[in-house]
Length: 461
Image (cartoon, rainbow, N blue to C red; front, side, top):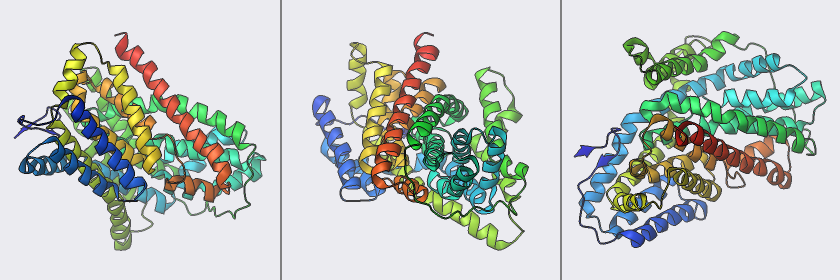
């Protein structure tokens, strides 16, 4: 068995396959449609949807059964072996921040820095920081009590604060590692070695997205009526600020330093080792341990166990996404697309547009941003080399394009939609007209930013 350069998806010997060209595209399209219908209409778990679609693709194209199973096993295991630990460590940090109250302490810090005159901006920034390690659903539940408290203090519409918080959480949830979705997408695409670059691009793409989100939240949120929900906010007995922020700050700094050194072509084994995502996040976990109220096996077992349990569904979907990509790689699609590229009928920028559209379709149909990130990246991974998307910047921008698509559009089949509407007191019809509309705008802003960055960093290079 020969492995691809990124060490993840295997390169299988080419098999005499019955289908190719347009027929092959039709089968791949039917596989995507099956995933959409199975997960959105029949509510089948994405793992099973992907598994069945993978088998359907392999058998219909004409790959022998033994080769399909080999592709499934190798694609599943090799991808998890590459990014599985990263996802688990990030989830552990997120659970500890949530349960220790450190997420609230970080929110209080940002609110103090931004000031009481910019409460909507403060809530947007709070959400964007907290959601890097904490899932956006949990983050909104934890921080929703701030909305009523700050609204009463500043006389700003509570709807504006709710939309700002929701948008901030959502942005980094889909764009910036070590959130599991972007990490899994980077792993699928062979960009795990460039995770620092992906992270830096995520921060850059997030800036205009957050600015537009802040403006929309102030404008649209001011017209929303919200139920007067009780406040459950307690800022006493929280961990110190430095303890709260270090589990996030230290891994980001270590990964960023290693990425900067690599970009500058500076060899430094010590910083390169510390900047490996697994090591950086392990150090973050060590700092997170200081947030335990006391040294007790209850915290060690329960909190860490919950973090691992949270990572479980992400890992199985990610692994099956790798299996789908491995079977796709065994088809002649890459060769067929290569001919299109040679004939001048394909472009990298067009490929980013396709990635955005596929992720948008998956997100809108089945509700999960993480699933949209994983499935889209696994589908497109075998084609990156053919289109010439190989550098860290090109792969990072592809992760951003998929992340933008996985934002649009959040509605009733998305658990986060219900968390935002119910915990903010916004009526469902108004949530569609405000929050769902906002997620669509966010996705378009992300893709527009990707296009600008591509033209600046790649297209004009």
